[in-house]
Length: 231
Image (tube, rainbow, N blue to C red):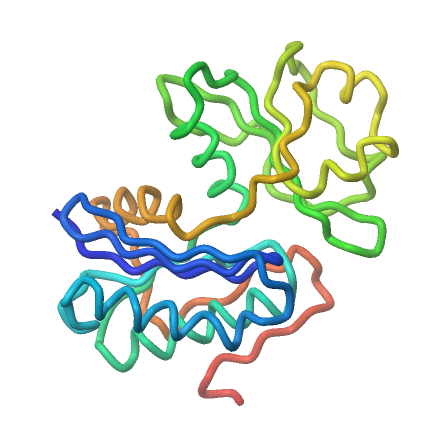
């Protein structure tokens, strides 16, 4: 059984969660612009509650984006710093996959198609589409950033799940696409709790990274990230 800490600050929500041999401890708060004040105290509270030291963990997962540029940097930097201090590997997790995973884990009858979208500001959205096969996610359309009107997915059936803040632009999206969607779930945020299951599977497959080797995923090419040894 795994011991994993997960962090996310990619949107207005700030969250941390701890997986301890099947048991999950969690913190979640929607608090715009307060992530730097909330994240590490959340981590400290989880470790204290669990009675487990940071060095006893197997890995640290974090929301690597897409999302808020500043928010992604906070989670990436925190994960790097904690992992370096405790000599742990890290697992970068897609925020769009995290939302789709929450939907699958919490829905009684999940749809077989999902379109996750986050508000990218500047009248754009981060989005991708998913197929669900035997309870597992597979990309139908890979992650990208575009104007809402350019969100296009072939072969979607009526009743697909529409998740995330990017659906606030539904009036600007293709009318046929919106007509096929379930009522959008704008209340689903990337959440560290649901990153844990993704990270646990990645850890089992040996898909971890050194903390020095990870970078945020912005999807906008003009945004640069300097690794710690370059700062």
